[in-house]
Length: 336
Image (cartoon, rainbow, N blue to C red; front, side, top):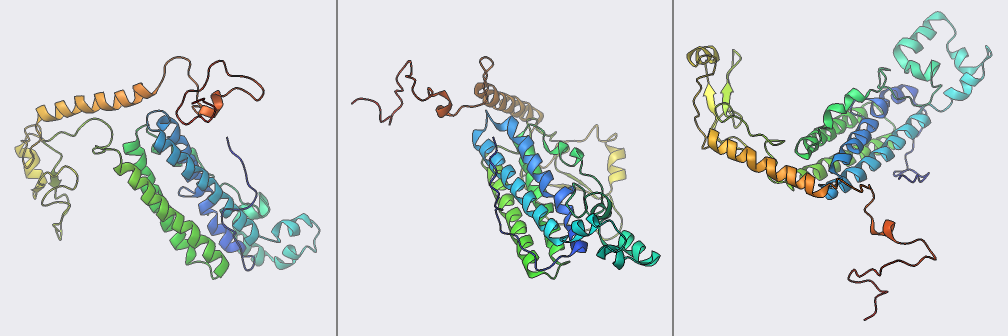
């Protein structure tokens, strides 16, 4: 359940209204890398983690809830930056201040096309809407692909999501001169950095976690690097030496067309530069399948299913005696 505290997590402030910057800040309210997307991404991922990985469930729910708090901070900042618009639009007569500012066709066209988001003028009257900075409505397609029911995949999506969100805040900071707004954005940006590290640590605590999921890659193709472009060719740890995760030696294919022809479109590709074999891969697939299915199945009851597992939930109501004493160690009610 959720409990709302009406104070913000971070006491956001603005020095003065700035509807134009509020338009940009909508990107973090209803954009693809914004706070609503983050909150719902982690919230959705948490359900599959509840039983087999209660520690990761706790992490995901904590960060999801914090992201809702950040959504509130962004929304409050947008509202403060658009101070005055709602009241002026409520004055529907010709002499309203905002209408006086828009005297003439040129002024009105400038306001509509070049200044603040049109949502502020004709839909939300200065309040934040769930759109990005261009006015495109928020959509679940931003996040549905990040919920795959496997933490070795989901947590990698989360690390990438925090990276993108951090960069958006970094760019937003450059478009405002308001020191108070900069402080708020810097706080939000810093929390993305913190979450990045938390998700990475959670991923590292799951071993093995590569490749993501269960099935291992085909050893014939897992260390091939195809030089699929003409011009300056570069070599580095991404195409020479051992691969970062499997430790296989990269096989650099300098002429991909020739190689494909010589190997019957790779059907006759040989295993090179790795100790992995088809036999070892098959063995690993079976080991991982058993390991992960056991983790999930052993932690998930199939009868008398309930979501809450808090010991407090099973205690009798006030004034009622329990039918059986609680014999857990440390219970102060037990007689010595």
